[in-house]
Length: 222
Image 1 (cartoon, rainbow, N blue to C red):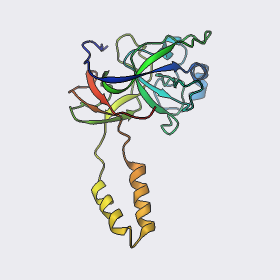
Image 2: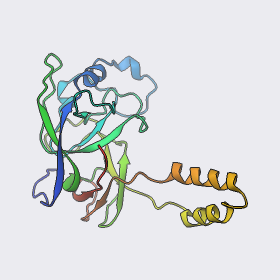
Image 3: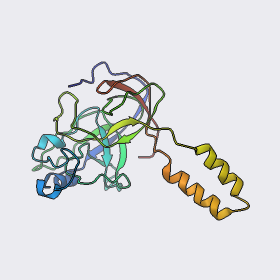
Image 4: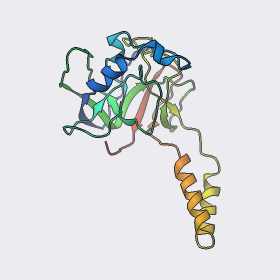
């Protein structure tokens, strides 16, 4: 198990968010039968409340982008989601405080999320990350490896973004065809927008799999 000790301190921006009790309860009520044929290891494990706790340093996401009371309703666990649909899941930030899940009690106490600036996480991807690498969200390949977190908890991880292929060539084609073939230019532009990576952060340190990683979260509207 890895620890988040000796974290890098730096300028950051924080917001208050709230735990998404309703969605967590829905995920908790899923049964193993629901996941027959699902190849995602551990996604079907929902039997323990600890799987839905939010711990410091975890990636927070929101399934419902509409804030009912001005607060984003967040989760860190992917247990019980069935299928990860990134078009319906919005990255919020990194948890700076914790929340303990209790299905019998709807606790309205908020927690704090870092949404931009310098923050420390664990490299839970399958590859080494180098300083300057642009990072995107990735589905987990295994349960959590962070100290103090249930080993069967599934959660998002950061991974190094693969460089986009032939981006400059596509851009040149768009400009070349704008006047002569506007429909073709529009199609190429749509292709570029659809396939471009959604960069979340930039790595500030070197980290092998399971090691502590300092990152710079890109500012975004939350």
